Amino acid sequence: MPNFKKALFTLNLNPDAYKDITDMTYPLIKHYAHKIGAEFIEITERKFPDWPPNYEKVQVYELGQKMENDWNIFFDCDALIHPNAPDFTAHLPKDTVAHNGSDMASIRFVYDRFFWRDGRNIGSASWCCIASDWCIELFRPVDDMMPDEVKARIFPTSNELKSGVEPIRLVEDFVFSRNIAKYGLKFTTLKEIQKALGIPDMGCFFHLYAVPKEEKVEKMKQALEAWGF
Image (spheres, one colour):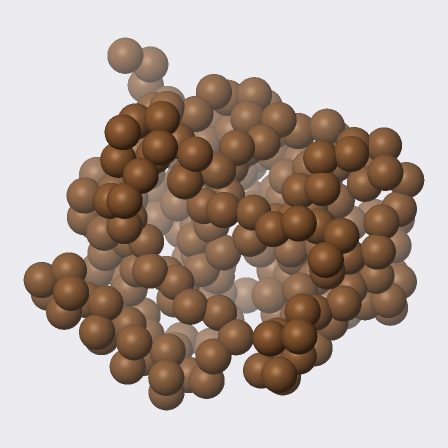
């Protein structure tokens, strides 16, 4: 068996504000990191102040290379990971990147030449990302567009608009989607891997997006109860 070096990253720039959430998620995230032999890394400082806070996920691009990781895994700090979740890196080729799922890119984003050329219409769901050192460009910061230019290409869905999601809130989804297209990265989803493994309904994760914090916390508690915690 190869002895791959792995790191599991999360982003938490405001620990006090998210403590009620991370009290639920961090024990499970850290358990998963230990299970798959990954170092747990919490990103807590800003490096890109001209961009919104969630853009700081792109720090994985530099960190992963400095650490010389074979695998770089990212989960949002509000993601619940079931203890039975498999090590997806054991079933993912190093030439392929993965999210848990994906969206139709043209629903949210105005295409440029990279999206048009690529033609796969892959829209990133960036709360869950896996990329090897071969494909670290998934996390590469944008270097040919300014924040206002990116914002102008993002159009939240009707449900997101009703929840108060501003276009720039989707910046990392746009950047990662564009990187997949720009660099021609092979792509799959963890849902597809689970289906191939014969465990399509395992329910490895619980993650809510664009809901009020109070509602999110309550539903996370319900999910943990359903899991037997």
